[in-house]
Length: 140
Image 1 (cartoon, rainbow, N blue to C red):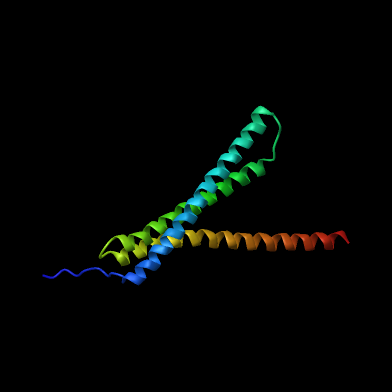
Image 2 (cartoon, rainbow, N blue to C red; image 1 turned 90 degrees about the horizontal axis):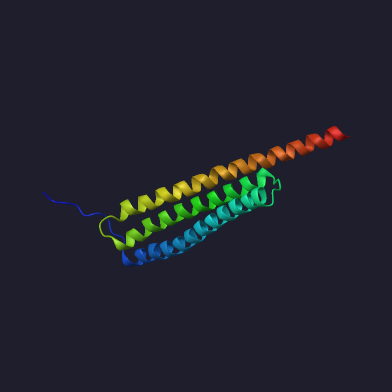
């Protein structure tokens, strides 16, 4: 009985994956830290204004900072996970296709989230445009 070896990319292909993994890892770290920073600042400012200065703040600004921070942290995590998958292609042997598919799965998560956010943004812009046209027609 023979065992078949998995596919291996050649050295020049591995350099492409290695370079991509390094760049994605740095971007992922920056996004992750940016998200954590944004979350922390949103929470600190909200707590400071509400409990220390006892001022009412618009809940939308607190929610905006928290959502934005969580979104960036999620993007950073998925970008780093994809980078790890691409890095494994270079570091391991006989598992290149499996590692590539794992990295692609993480990229799919990343772009699925961005895809749905883009659709929601487009729909929101269209709704605002329609409401403003109807409002201006009603005013005349």
